[in-house]
Length: 291
Image 1 (cartoon, rainbow, N blue to C red):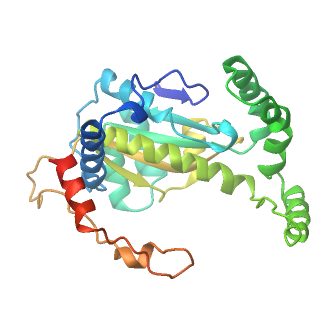
Image 2: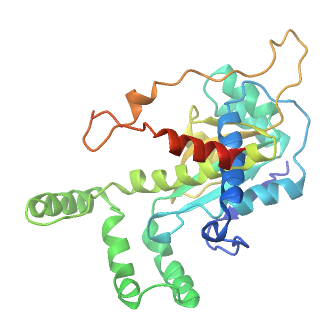
Image 3: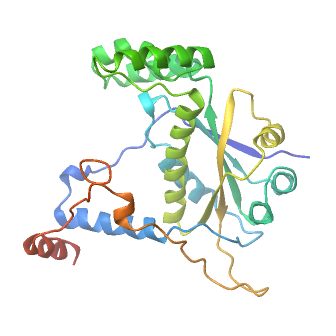
């Protein structure tokens, strides 16, 4: 069978805003905030997708052009994204990889499965990124001088090396600020999550439905998708169009409950209440900008 996989290599940044936020008027900034707020607050995890419906290539390209702007540690961009659209491949993922009936039928019905790959051998991409940075000539020379060494030291490849680095930095921390050394999986998965969030919001901006999923057998997924051992698969995002109804479907997907603000956000120390009260004048100013 034909394995239709589209791999997007997150290794460059050719997309720039035509007007910086700094130069926008207050009204333009308020309009931008309103648009972003609407996108973020409209996103929900889709329970069901409309089957047999394709995402136009122009829309997918725009989503990926936004996705590629995601930040990453040292700008190493250790994330790749596979856009799986082949129906036969999706059926295999649903049958052989997914855990639970919900993930299985979402995988089959979604227009595309965005599979996020995290590089676990980050040192192999450092020279490429250093070359890009030198060509861009945007960095301070001192930063460029230490970039290869610092990036190699902090990404924590290998259990023994990570343990030794953690011991050394823990011993020196009481004397001077030291970095926290993470296993490469933690570091690279964290960066992949940033890319996945950008992708999800970009898809939402086009009116698409999404569902982030981590309930799958990574080993089987890598075998079916021919992913090299170098990469982990932290998550997938089912992407498509929300189911339009019928079959006794209850209707629009509802938002799951969230903790209260005071349970999540703190002030200057952990657990300290965060004071966000505004003066009457400040409130009026904001209302005028939004109106």
